[in-house]
Image (cartoon, rainbow, N blue to C red; front, side):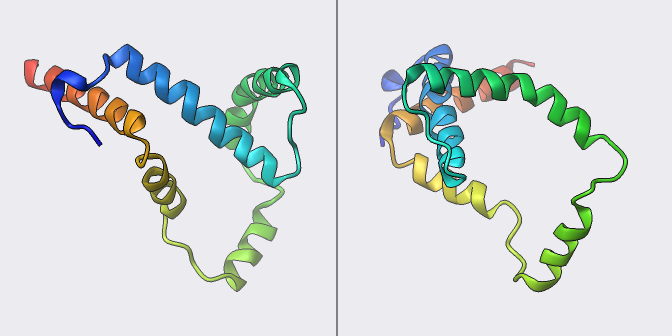
Length: 120
């Protein structure tokens, strides 16, 4: 993993790398867990477009009063061992940071954020 400032990508390139490489891998990996695997590029693009259209609807539903799934979720919480909050995020971060390009992309973004904060 490179930490040299000269080898870090630009912020735009870093964001592009993370968007292209991680978002799709996480999205399609999650779908694969449910047995949904696109058979070609058109299907993959259609799945991405569907998810993008459903995102605002999902956000609105999260703000709805009661969930019809609250009771089953509570029942599962009662019988399952509690999981550390954010454990899945930590595991995913550890996995993806093994890629030097991803590591450098995150460093570039964080460096830009620090420089912006210092300038204020």
